[in-house]
Amino acid sequence: MTRRVSGRLLAVCVSGADLLPLPDKRPNRSGIDKKPVAGRVAVHPLGLEGDVQVNRKHHGGEGQAVYAYAQADADWWEAELDRELPPGRFGENLRTAGLDLRNAVIGEQWQVGTALLQVTAWRTPCANFARFWGVPDLVKRFAAHGATGAYLRVLETGDLGAGDAVDVVSRPDHGITVETAFRIVMTEKARLPELTPILPFLADKDRPVLSAKIEKRLAVRV
Image 1 (tube, rainbow, N blue to C red):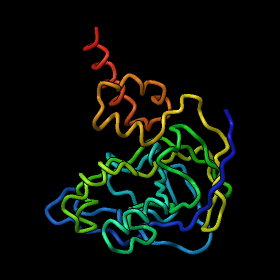
Image 2: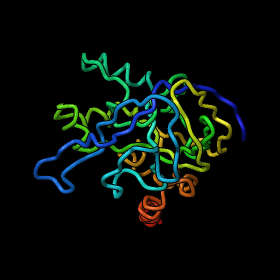
Image 3: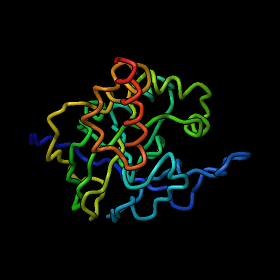
Image 4: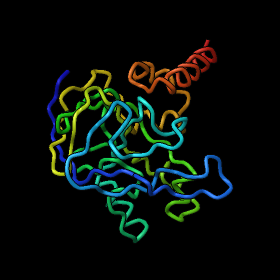
């Protein structure tokens, strides 16, 4: 099913050499501290030119090459925490406007600039995120709110820049959204078999993990 929906890029952000130090942690640095960059940015199979993904076990790699966060969701957090959260503060590569990322469908495809991207998953909040913001209970609050942003796979390389349109050029029929999948995985595990249709779209590293959880849940039902 094809449904053309348009938003736009407010900013493109990369970490470059500005890695967040993590004393007494392994790895002892993080690429979460991203900054907006000017001009066109090349999109490679594993991410944006100049972006550093330190720990690809948890963030990055082929199915998490790019991370997007919506301005509307950032606005909610700005009001909640009474602080400014400019592009990059969520560790995102793309700050978007005009797209409801909570209701982005797993597997939908975006044309952005000359690159073709695919929504693959939600973002699971981690301790580094809480440390970066200096909010000790952020992981719990972020999970409860449910606006996780969206990880993206690069289907076609190209380039993109702030101001580009973000066109949703295709959307799978299964209808499972980023937020729905996140809530099922986190708190509604009895519904895990409902996520079977999204397995082909997940990152290679995540697919067997979720598949095993689904099989375990199905076994409980028998």
